[in-house]
Length: 387
Image 1: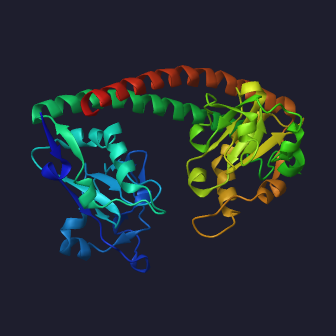
Image 2: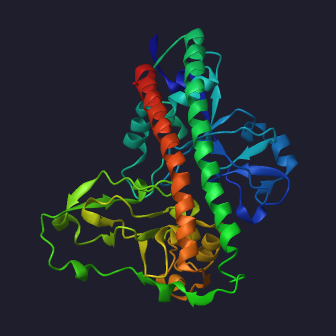
Image 3: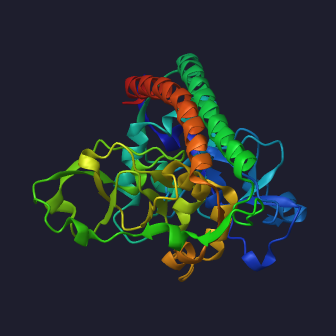
């Protein structure tokens, strides 16, 4: 085992600066930073370029199994594996790892997700308004390299662990979809009120962004939960392990309480479905990112029902349509919730739905525990081989 630079065993190919005005549809798809999601690469056939360009510039071709990296922006360093048979083109500020015979590509994929590489990215890409890293910088990354046989053995072991992680995530996703399916079955499209229930607005049925003034007599040393945006998972779970004193969070943060519904107002988190019911808060009180809207249900709304409504695709599409602000800084305004029309089901039916969700959540909890244990195993192996 020897210490090498990534550039000794691999080349990082940068992308081409395509002009957006020349994009086509249904031709050779262009892979941009936004196409790299959750360690995979998505294709958008609305953003394509000509076959003639690919024939003239094969160096920008992306093939099945290629590993890509984001080289700019807030998500600089994120990795995606291209697993499509369709050929694609590499856009600027996306890198493609061209490996030599000294490097097993599956081994490289895990190396690039290791704490060692993450630390390297943090040290080299950040520190300015727009995080960036170049191909040359990435090729300077140093690590201890195993021989090819050992690389394959390590990759095989990590592949097996990753398969379990992917399976557990799929199980959770399927249970989340079951909840949404049950919602539609019981309530239809509440936005269109196709069940002819009481016609109202969220603004009438919820307290929106409750004021901190109701906490005016709170002791400054009183302990509360702190929930940053990353502490909310994509399936609506909140990490309530961070505890702060009231005096540390009473200014500059959003206030909420047990059973309030959180809804991310900014574009990136909208796309990832950030939102949750606040449950398990320290002393029933929480503070968090100012990029949350807070919806506090009145007596005619069940919190679980409300959260599921806000997690529905149709609701989020409408919220995104009503965003205001400049490009890149758009947010969902509070007026969206104030004026959102809906048919409100009887509270008894909402409570029945919440009981169903509670049973499904028990299954999710057990799967989540297994997922977290497997992720700890993966982290341990990562530190062992790449630490």
